[in-house]
Length: 345
Image (cartoon, rainbow, N blue to C red; front, side, top):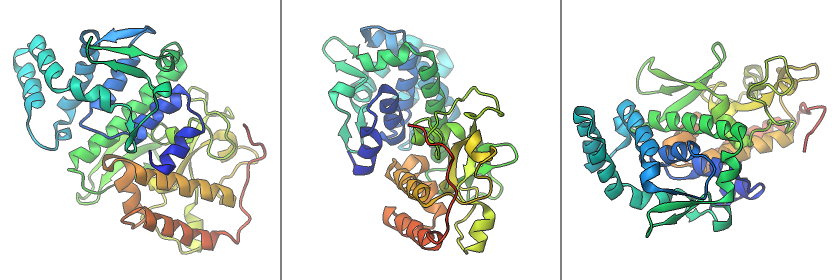
Protein backbone atom coordinates (compact mmCIF):
# COMPACT_ATOMS: atom_id res chain seq x y z
CA UNK A 1 0.00 0.00 0.00
CA UNK A 2 1.41 3.41 -0.94
CA UNK A 3 2.76 5.44 1.97
CA UNK A 4 0.21 8.28 1.97
CA UNK A 5 -2.69 5.84 1.65
CA UNK A 6 -1.22 3.71 4.43
CA UNK A 7 -0.98 6.76 6.70
CA UNK A 8 -4.58 7.67 5.91
CA UNK A 9 -5.74 4.16 6.79
CA UNK A 10 -3.39 3.10 9.58
CA UNK A 11 -4.45 5.67 12.19
CA UNK A 12 -7.99 4.32 12.45
CA UNK A 13 -8.51 0.81 11.13
CA UNK A 14 -12.20 0.89 11.92
CA UNK A 15 -14.85 -0.44 9.49
CA UNK A 16 -15.90 3.03 8.32
CA UNK A 17 -12.29 3.91 7.45
CA UNK A 18 -11.94 0.57 5.65
CA UNK A 19 -14.94 1.36 3.46
CA UNK A 20 -13.65 4.88 2.82
CA UNK A 21 -10.16 3.66 1.89
CA UNK A 22 -11.63 1.20 -0.62
CA UNK A 23 -13.94 3.79 -2.17
CA UNK A 24 -11.26 6.51 -2.34
CA UNK A 25 -8.20 4.53 -3.39
CA UNK A 26 -9.29 1.18 -4.78
CA UNK A 27 -9.19 0.80 -8.54
CA UNK A 28 -12.37 1.77 -10.40
CA UNK A 29 -12.84 -1.19 -12.73
CA UNK A 30 -16.08 -0.28 -14.46
CA UNK A 31 -18.45 0.28 -11.54
CA UNK A 32 -18.09 -3.16 -9.96
CA UNK A 33 -16.57 -1.77 -6.76
CA UNK A 34 -19.39 0.73 -6.20
CA UNK A 35 -22.12 -1.74 -7.13
CA UNK A 36 -20.73 -4.33 -4.73
CA UNK A 37 -20.48 -1.73 -1.97
CA UNK A 38 -24.11 -0.79 -2.53
CA UNK A 39 -25.23 -4.43 -2.52
CA UNK A 40 -23.33 -5.20 0.68
CA UNK A 41 -24.93 -2.24 2.44
CA UNK A 42 -28.38 -3.63 1.59
CA UNK A 43 -27.69 -6.73 3.69
CA UNK A 44 -28.77 -7.42 7.23
CA UNK A 45 -26.11 -8.53 9.73
CA UNK A 46 -25.34 -12.21 9.06
CA UNK A 47 -22.52 -14.73 8.93
CA UNK A 48 -22.46 -15.38 5.20
CA UNK A 49 -24.20 -14.60 1.93
CA UNK A 50 -24.33 -16.79 -1.17
CA UNK A 51 -23.56 -15.24 -4.56
CA UNK A 52 -27.06 -16.11 -5.72
CA UNK A 53 -28.57 -14.10 -2.84
CA UNK A 54 -26.31 -11.09 -3.46
CA UNK A 55 -26.57 -10.97 -7.24
CA UNK A 56 -29.95 -9.24 -7.37
CA UNK A 57 -28.91 -6.04 -5.63
CA UNK A 58 -25.48 -6.07 -7.25
CA UNK A 59 -26.77 -6.40 -10.81
CA UNK A 60 -29.63 -3.94 -10.32
CA UNK A 61 -27.16 -1.26 -9.20
CA UNK A 62 -24.72 -2.12 -11.97
CA UNK A 63 -27.47 -2.03 -14.59
CA UNK A 64 -28.89 1.26 -13.25
CA UNK A 65 -25.54 2.97 -13.65
CA UNK A 66 -24.80 1.31 -16.98
CA UNK A 67 -28.00 2.81 -18.38
CA UNK A 68 -26.97 6.31 -17.28
CA UNK A 69 -23.28 5.88 -18.14
CA UNK A 70 -22.46 3.17 -20.73
CA UNK A 71 -19.09 4.91 -21.21
CA UNK A 72 -17.82 3.19 -18.06
CA UNK A 73 -16.73 0.23 -20.21
CA UNK A 74 -13.97 2.16 -21.93
CA UNK A 75 -12.93 -0.84 -24.01
CA UNK A 76 -16.26 -0.85 -25.82
CA UNK A 77 -18.95 -3.51 -26.00
CA UNK A 78 -18.25 -6.82 -24.29
CA UNK A 79 -20.15 -9.84 -22.97
CA UNK A 80 -21.50 -7.93 -19.96
CA UNK A 81 -22.63 -4.83 -21.85
CA UNK A 82 -24.29 -6.99 -24.50
CA UNK A 83 -26.11 -8.86 -21.73
CA UNK A 84 -27.35 -5.55 -20.31
CA UNK A 85 -28.54 -4.44 -23.75
CA UNK A 86 -30.35 -7.73 -24.29
CA UNK A 87 -31.95 -7.48 -20.86
CA UNK A 88 -33.25 -4.02 -21.83
CA UNK A 89 -34.99 -5.64 -24.80
CA UNK A 90 -36.23 -8.98 -23.50
CA UNK A 91 -36.15 -8.65 -19.68
CA UNK A 92 -34.53 -12.08 -19.28
CA UNK A 93 -33.11 -11.72 -15.78
CA UNK A 94 -31.89 -15.31 -15.44
CA UNK A 95 -29.75 -14.97 -18.54
CA UNK A 96 -28.19 -11.79 -17.13
CA UNK A 97 -27.42 -13.49 -13.80
CA UNK A 98 -25.76 -16.42 -15.57
CA UNK A 99 -23.49 -14.14 -17.60
CA UNK A 100 -22.60 -12.16 -14.48
CA UNK A 101 -21.59 -15.34 -12.66
CA UNK A 102 -19.32 -16.31 -15.53
CA UNK A 103 -17.78 -12.92 -16.29
CA UNK A 104 -17.90 -10.79 -13.12
CA UNK A 105 -17.88 -12.72 -9.88
CA UNK A 106 -14.52 -14.38 -10.43
CA UNK A 107 -12.93 -10.91 -10.40
CA UNK A 108 -14.99 -8.46 -8.37
CA UNK A 109 -14.82 -10.11 -4.92
CA UNK A 110 -11.06 -10.63 -4.95
CA UNK A 111 -10.39 -7.12 -6.29
CA UNK A 112 -12.60 -5.32 -3.78
CA UNK A 113 -9.99 -5.14 -0.99
CA UNK A 114 -7.10 -4.17 -3.30
CA UNK A 115 -5.91 -0.67 -2.46
CA UNK A 116 -2.72 1.07 -3.58
CA UNK A 117 -1.23 -2.08 -5.04
CA UNK A 118 -1.85 -4.41 -2.08
CA UNK A 119 -4.73 -5.95 -0.16
CA UNK A 120 -6.18 -4.72 3.11
CA UNK A 121 -5.09 -7.21 5.79
CA UNK A 122 -7.40 -10.09 6.57
CA UNK A 123 -8.12 -8.92 10.11
CA UNK A 124 -9.58 -5.68 8.71
CA UNK A 125 -11.32 -7.16 5.66
CA UNK A 126 -15.08 -6.82 5.25
CA UNK A 127 -15.57 -10.35 3.96
CA UNK A 128 -13.76 -13.53 2.95
CA UNK A 129 -14.32 -14.98 -0.53
CA UNK A 130 -15.21 -18.68 -0.45
CA UNK A 131 -14.91 -19.63 -4.12
CA UNK A 132 -15.63 -23.32 -3.61
CA UNK A 133 -19.04 -22.79 -1.98
CA UNK A 134 -19.76 -19.60 -3.96
CA UNK A 135 -20.37 -17.40 -0.96
CA UNK A 136 -18.95 -14.50 1.02
CA UNK A 137 -18.21 -14.99 4.71
CA UNK A 138 -18.99 -11.66 6.39
CA UNK A 139 -16.63 -10.42 9.09
CA UNK A 140 -17.36 -8.59 12.33
CA UNK A 141 -16.15 -5.40 10.61
CA UNK A 142 -18.94 -5.24 8.06
CA UNK A 143 -21.56 -6.49 10.50
CA UNK A 144 -20.72 -3.58 12.82
CA UNK A 145 -21.59 -1.25 9.94
CA UNK A 146 -24.76 -3.14 9.03
CA UNK A 147 -25.91 -2.91 12.64
CA UNK A 148 -25.45 0.87 12.71
CA UNK A 149 -27.96 2.75 10.48
CA UNK A 150 -26.11 6.07 10.91
CA UNK A 151 -22.74 4.70 9.77
CA UNK A 152 -24.35 2.73 6.95
CA UNK A 153 -26.12 5.84 5.66
CA UNK A 154 -22.84 7.79 5.63
CA UNK A 155 -21.20 5.15 3.44
CA UNK A 156 -24.22 4.93 1.12
CA UNK A 157 -24.04 8.67 0.44
CA UNK A 158 -20.27 8.70 0.00
CA UNK A 159 -20.40 5.69 -2.33
CA UNK A 160 -23.00 7.33 -4.56
CA UNK A 161 -21.08 10.64 -4.64
CA UNK A 162 -17.89 8.85 -5.55
CA UNK A 163 -19.67 6.87 -8.22
CA UNK A 164 -20.97 10.06 -9.83
CA UNK A 165 -17.50 11.62 -10.02
CA UNK A 166 -16.00 8.54 -11.65
CA UNK A 167 -18.83 8.36 -14.16
CA UNK A 168 -18.32 11.98 -15.16
CA UNK A 169 -14.71 11.17 -15.98
CA UNK A 170 -15.84 8.25 -18.13
CA UNK A 171 -18.45 10.37 -19.91
CA UNK A 172 -15.73 12.89 -20.74
CA UNK A 173 -13.59 10.02 -22.04
CA UNK A 174 -11.14 10.59 -19.18
CA UNK A 175 -10.23 14.02 -20.51
CA UNK A 176 -9.13 16.52 -17.85
CA UNK A 177 -12.05 18.05 -16.02
CA UNK A 178 -12.23 20.48 -13.14
CA UNK A 179 -14.39 20.07 -10.10
CA UNK A 180 -15.60 23.47 -8.99
CA UNK A 181 -17.80 24.58 -6.14
CA UNK A 182 -20.71 26.93 -6.83
CA UNK A 183 -21.15 29.13 -3.77
CA UNK A 184 -24.63 30.15 -4.95
CA UNK A 185 -26.31 26.76 -4.89
CA UNK A 186 -23.65 25.06 -2.69
CA UNK A 187 -23.16 22.19 -5.11
CA UNK A 188 -20.11 20.71 -6.78
CA UNK A 189 -19.89 20.73 -10.56
CA UNK A 190 -17.79 18.82 -13.05
CA UNK A 191 -16.60 21.27 -15.70
CA UNK A 192 -15.13 19.95 -18.94
CA UNK A 193 -12.55 22.47 -20.14
CA UNK A 194 -12.86 21.22 -23.72
CA UNK A 195 -16.58 21.94 -23.94
CA UNK A 196 -17.73 25.53 -23.55
CA UNK A 197 -20.34 25.98 -20.81
CA UNK A 198 -20.55 22.23 -20.33
CA UNK A 199 -20.83 21.40 -16.65
CA UNK A 200 -22.61 18.70 -14.68
CA UNK A 201 -24.08 19.05 -11.22
CA UNK A 202 -22.55 16.46 -8.88
CA UNK A 203 -24.67 17.74 -6.00
CA UNK A 204 -23.25 17.97 -2.51
CA UNK A 205 -19.56 18.76 -2.14
CA UNK A 206 -19.81 17.60 1.48
CA UNK A 207 -20.08 13.90 0.58
CA UNK A 208 -17.16 14.20 -1.84
CA UNK A 209 -14.76 15.93 0.57
CA UNK A 210 -15.74 14.58 3.98
CA UNK A 211 -14.33 11.02 3.53
CA UNK A 212 -10.78 12.47 3.36
CA UNK A 213 -11.43 14.09 6.73
CA UNK A 214 -12.95 10.90 8.13
CA UNK A 215 -16.14 12.74 8.99
CA UNK A 216 -14.51 15.48 11.09
CA UNK A 217 -14.09 19.24 10.79
CA UNK A 218 -10.88 20.08 8.94
CA UNK A 219 -9.86 22.56 11.65
CA UNK A 220 -11.09 21.61 15.12
CA UNK A 221 -11.61 17.88 14.44
CA UNK A 222 -15.18 17.99 15.76
CA UNK A 223 -17.34 15.20 14.35
CA UNK A 224 -19.58 16.57 11.62
CA UNK A 225 -23.31 15.89 11.88
CA UNK A 226 -24.86 15.60 8.43
CA UNK A 227 -28.41 15.92 9.76
CA UNK A 228 -27.90 18.94 12.02
CA UNK A 229 -29.47 22.31 11.25
CA UNK A 230 -27.40 25.15 9.78
CA UNK A 231 -27.28 27.07 13.07
CA UNK A 232 -25.76 24.19 15.05
CA UNK A 233 -22.02 24.06 15.72
CA UNK A 234 -21.51 20.65 14.10
CA UNK A 235 -23.29 21.55 10.84
CA UNK A 236 -21.03 20.98 7.77
CA UNK A 237 -19.92 23.98 5.72
CA UNK A 238 -17.71 23.98 2.63
CA UNK A 239 -14.85 26.37 3.38
CA UNK A 240 -12.41 27.99 0.96
CA UNK A 241 -9.07 27.40 2.65
CA UNK A 242 -7.77 30.55 1.01
CA UNK A 243 -10.22 33.34 0.20
CA UNK A 244 -10.01 34.99 -3.19
CA UNK A 245 -8.70 38.24 -1.68
CA UNK A 246 -5.71 36.41 -0.19
CA UNK A 247 -4.84 34.66 -3.46
CA UNK A 248 -4.87 37.96 -5.30
CA UNK A 249 -2.88 39.83 -2.63
CA UNK A 250 -0.09 37.26 -2.62
CA UNK A 251 -0.20 36.63 -6.35
CA UNK A 252 -1.14 32.97 -6.03
CA UNK A 253 -3.01 32.01 -9.14
CA UNK A 254 -4.34 28.48 -9.52
CA UNK A 255 -7.19 28.24 -12.00
CA UNK A 256 -10.01 28.88 -9.57
CA UNK A 257 -10.52 29.73 -5.92
CA UNK A 258 -13.53 27.40 -6.17
CA UNK A 259 -11.41 24.47 -7.39
CA UNK A 260 -11.43 21.36 -5.26
CA UNK A 261 -7.75 21.92 -4.32
CA UNK A 262 -8.92 24.83 -2.14
CA UNK A 263 -12.03 23.28 -0.54
CA UNK A 264 -12.39 21.64 2.87
CA UNK A 265 -15.33 20.80 5.12
CA UNK A 266 -15.52 22.84 8.33
CA UNK A 267 -18.07 22.86 11.13
CA UNK A 268 -20.33 25.90 11.36
CA UNK A 269 -18.53 27.05 14.51
CA UNK A 270 -15.13 27.14 12.80
CA UNK A 271 -16.33 28.55 9.50
CA UNK A 272 -18.69 31.31 10.57
CA UNK A 273 -19.26 31.12 14.32
CA UNK A 274 -18.48 33.92 16.76
CA UNK A 275 -14.74 33.19 16.63
CA UNK A 276 -14.80 31.57 13.19
CA UNK A 277 -12.36 31.73 10.31
CA UNK A 278 -14.48 33.74 7.86
CA UNK A 279 -12.08 35.41 5.35
CA UNK A 280 -8.89 34.72 7.31
CA UNK A 281 -6.18 32.29 6.16
CA UNK A 282 -5.70 29.39 8.57
CA UNK A 283 -2.60 28.68 10.62
CA UNK A 284 0.37 26.97 8.97
CA UNK A 285 -0.33 23.50 10.40
CA UNK A 286 -3.60 23.47 8.46
CA UNK A 287 -1.74 24.39 5.31
CA UNK A 288 0.38 21.27 5.80
CA UNK A 289 -2.81 19.27 6.28
CA UNK A 290 -4.20 20.66 3.02
CA UNK A 291 -0.95 19.81 1.23
CA UNK A 292 -1.19 16.19 2.39
CA UNK A 293 -4.84 16.02 1.36
CA UNK A 294 -4.05 17.33 -2.14
CA UNK A 295 -1.26 14.80 -2.51
CA UNK A 296 -3.73 12.10 -1.49
CA UNK A 297 -5.90 13.17 -4.44
CA UNK A 298 -2.97 12.38 -6.74
CA UNK A 299 -2.65 8.89 -5.25
CA UNK A 300 -6.14 8.06 -6.48
CA UNK A 301 -6.97 6.05 -9.52
CA UNK A 302 -7.04 8.31 -12.58
CA UNK A 303 -10.83 8.26 -12.91
CA UNK A 304 -11.53 10.26 -9.75
CA UNK A 305 -10.20 13.55 -8.40
CA UNK A 306 -6.64 13.09 -9.65
CA UNK A 307 -7.17 14.77 -13.01
CA UNK A 308 -8.95 17.70 -11.43
CA UNK A 309 -6.28 18.45 -8.83
CA UNK A 310 -3.46 18.21 -11.38
CA UNK A 311 -5.28 20.55 -13.74
CA UNK A 312 -6.22 23.06 -11.04
CA UNK A 313 -2.62 23.29 -9.88
CA UNK A 314 -1.11 23.28 -13.40
CA UNK A 315 0.83 20.15 -12.47
CA UNK A 316 1.53 16.86 -14.21
CA UNK A 317 2.46 14.69 -11.22
CA UNK A 318 2.65 14.57 -7.42
CA UNK A 319 6.06 16.26 -7.32
CA UNK A 320 4.73 19.31 -9.16
CA UNK A 321 1.69 19.46 -6.85
CA UNK A 322 4.11 19.42 -3.91
CA UNK A 323 6.23 22.14 -5.56
CA UNK A 324 3.16 24.37 -6.05
CA UNK A 325 2.15 23.86 -2.43
CA UNK A 326 5.64 24.77 -1.23
CA UNK A 327 5.56 27.88 -3.40
CA UNK A 328 2.39 28.89 -1.59
CA UNK A 329 3.98 28.07 1.75
CA UNK A 330 6.86 30.45 1.05
CA UNK A 331 4.33 33.27 0.68
CA UNK A 332 2.20 32.03 3.52
CA UNK A 333 4.71 31.35 6.32
CA UNK A 334 5.04 35.02 7.25
CA UNK A 335 1.41 35.18 8.30
CA UNK A 336 0.01 34.33 11.71
CA UNK A 337 -3.04 32.43 10.63
CA UNK A 338 -6.37 31.71 12.29
CA UNK A 339 -6.81 28.80 14.72
CA UNK A 340 -10.00 27.37 16.26
CA UNK A 341 -10.62 28.08 19.91
CA UNK A 342 -11.14 24.41 20.78
CA UNK A 343 -9.52 21.26 19.37
CA UNK A 344 -11.37 17.95 19.73
CA UNK A 345 -9.76 14.52 20.02
